[in-house]
Image 1 (cartoon, rainbow, N blue to C red):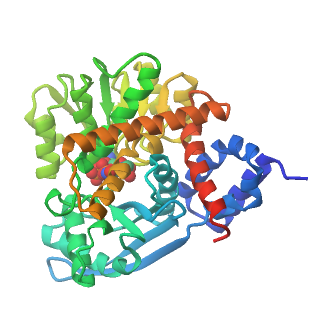
Image 2 (image 1 turned 90 degrees about the horizontal axis):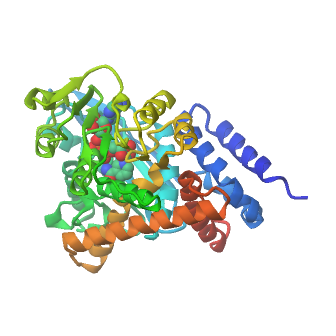
Image 3 (image 1 turned 180 degrees about the vertical axis):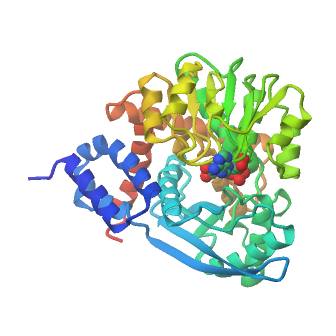
Length: 449
Ligand SMILES: NC(=O)c1ccc[n+]([C@@H]2O[C@H](COP(=O)([O-])OP(=O)(O)OC[C@H]3O[C@@H](n4cnc5c(N)ncnc54)[C@H](O)[C@@H]3O)[C@@H](O)[C@H]2O)c1
C-alpha cells in the first residue's frame, strides 16, 4: 500500500529539518511549500515513487567560502561567502546575491529553495540558486565595496558561468556591485561572458527594464488579481515598505497606473506622505545619496517620519511589502485588514509570516506570494540572458511589454493551478503547485541525478 500523501509530506519535512537543524527560515519555506503541494502529490504518485520530494529539498550543491579583504584603514577583514545551487532541472542556476550582516546558510537555503519554484513559474528555462555574504555594505566606502566584490568574485568565479550559474543582485547588491563583480570575473577568465551575471549596466550588456522589473512586475500582478474582481489599482491608496530597488519601482508603476502610494521605509523607520510619495526625492535620497529614510521627511513638508511603530498601521487598499523576510506578522496583517486592504502583493521574499498570510486569506484579501508577485525581476534577467546570447538589444517598450505578458502568464498559471487542485483563489497553493509541477516533471524526465 502507498503511504498517505500527508505522511509522505510530513516525513519529508521531518527528515529535512533533522538534517538541517537550526535553520528556521529554511524550515519555514519548506513547510509553506510542502503543505501547499499536498493536493498535487495526491494526484501524482509517480513523483513520490521517483523520490522527487526528497531530492527537491536537498540543494544540488552548497558552496561556502572565505572572503578576505582590506578596509580603508589597512585592517584585514574576513567575511563568509555563500552560493547555494538548489536545482538546475529547468536551466542554469539563477538567483541573486545578497550582502547583508544577517546572511547565513538558513537564509540562503530558504531563498534558493523558493527561487527554484519562482523561476519555474516564469517559464523562462532557469534553475534556482541564491548566494551572498554576511558583509555589511552600510557606511563602507566605494573603494571598500570594490575590494570586497573583487575578493568575493575571485572564489565565486570558479562556480558560475553563462550555462552553469548566473547570479544577479538582491539586498545590498545593485548596479554598482554587479559592475565590480563582472569586472573581476572578466579579468580572471579573460572572457567578456555577458551572460554570466544579470543586472549589468545598459551600456555593457544590461537589459532595459531590469532595474524596474521586480517592482513593476509586482504591480502588474496586483492589477491582474484585481481584474478578476473587475477592479483595478487606479485611485487606490498603497502602503509600501522598503525604499530599495523593489519598493522604488513598485511606487513608480503604482503612480503610473493612477494609484497613490503614501509610505516607504528602511530599517530605521518609515515615512507617511499623505500627498503621495515624491518619487524623484526618494530616488535622489536612496539611489544617489544612500541616505536614511528620515531625510525624506526633513525635506518634504507633507511627510512625517515615524521611528517606532509599524508602517502596516497606516490605512490603505493596497499593500506591497518590499523590504525583507518576516517583516509583516499577524498583528500587522490584522491592522491592514482594519485599514481596508483589498490586495497584497509580496515584493520582497517571504515578507509575510505564515500567520499573517492566514489573516489575509481568512479576511478574503487577495494575496500574492513573493514567488509569483516578485518573479518579474528574475524573468527580466532571463530576458537579459536571451539578449546576451543573441547579441541583441530590445527597447524599453518591448521589454516592458514582455515583462507584463510574463506576469499575466504567471497569474494565469497560478490561478488555474489553484482551481485545479481544489483551492480556488488561493495564489499560495496555485503558485507553489504550478512551479512545483514544472520542476518535478523535468526531474522525472531526466532520471535519478
Ligand atoms: N531586486 C530584485 O530584483 C528582487 C527580486 C525579487 C525579490 N527581491 C526581494 O525584495 C526584497 C528587497 O530587495 P531589494 O532588491 O529592493 O533590496 P535593496 O537593498 O535595494 O532594498 C532593501 C530595502 O529593505 C530595507 N530593509 C532591509 N532590511 C530591513 C529590515 N530589517 N527592516 C526594515 N527594512 C529593511 C532596506 O532599508 C531597503 O530599503 C528582498 O526580500 C529581496 O530578496 C528583490
